[in-house]
Length: 277
Length: 332
Image 1 (cartoon, rainbow over the protein chains, first blue to last red):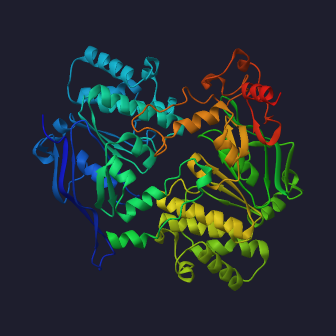
Image 2 (cartoon, rainbow over the protein chains, first blue to last red):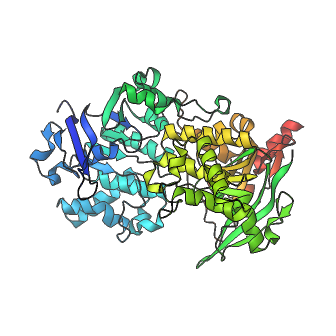
């Protein structure tokens, strides 16, 4: 077994923003030299504001975007060295919006089964059985398999997305805000499911979220990203009880828990943490 | 306390091919002058429909009825279209959810900020601009004079939402309806914007109806809270009472679903509410929450509970036969 399930070494992605035909393009360092390691079976939470490069990072890990610099190592193998097909057996995504990430013209069964067909695993009969088993595992009733995504609720759709991600038996899941489009009562169901699956299948998660309450509940370690860089990382206790970086402190102080007596938090000006990073 | 808005038995229904979708099923609401009322509920519970009905922004095919819809002594439903337009914008205004899409990309911010006040209050362009600059400054927008000539795409999401807030305040309205104004924003910006809304509300004495699905936000800013489920108000109370002593099983369920840093044990099984929201097409038989409720009894299937006072207090009302029965026992 490899020491790290997922290792990012000095990963960067730069974009050039056009400023019209005659001006120099501006350089945008969306992801700027990020190194991260996740051990097998560990859950790493990645938090940060919108536009800080979280999703660019996820895309590079998934092989949807070429890095400008640096490497992504999956189970000790460089992402670039093997084909996307073989990498996708080890690493699968769960996207934010279950309303747009499922093909509306395919039945649920077809959606969950597609990865097996692409990878030419098993015959029709065994594929059907695999779809049924995985739907059981994620708590999707069998009667829904013949339905279309439009007939399902948000929580059910996210279960479909999870089933589709798990059918190739990957060891790592990249979850990009998997519950932010869901209602709180449904969010709790999906979080419970993710925790159960982790225990049952020994999965490794990279959990990207801006909801710190959810992150605290789910993850072992936290990395805080700001303007393309990791400004602080540590275990859950280190980050949530003893944050050092002013940006992390500001993030934590803006979490609104349902306690009316506390009132609204005083939020520092962004210049404080700009200076520190 | 003077009531600025008093709504009795508001109903909204929309025709669909499968029958009438009754999105709002008899809501009683009131807002006092200078008060912050939060309406909280999950998607599809009718909270946005309620706000659109109050503003008179629903499409023509939507059927809006109410026993009363009094705004500062005026009956909103009997106003002509012209009079309604006068009220909307001048005395009631709205902050929408998406600062990215609710500003017109082809007009300057100055143009959009001043449009309403010039139309409603017959002020000169210069006066309107002066007020716009003043309010942008109140809303914490840096370089307010410069912003008037800028277009929405030149601003970040947080700044755009500040512009929307300034715009809502242009005509000094008595009531602002804010429909999920911070959902699209980052947490640090959200805290700033909530603070801003609270401060401006207290400074100008405006009443605010704040619509959200986030109980954390509700707890921190609300004076009073109305919890909605399936087109009805199921519980209403002061923020203090609602969070310390929730009565309706739905409210209790919602509060238990949220992992709270420092309170919920990390990695523990979260409580959730099983099942899904019932379809709002046609009549609902019995209590709308019955199929997802953990304490329901046989009677709940066919008897629709009404909104009853909890422990005899009009300030805390709950729509649940079981909670009412136990509250009655306690009182006796």
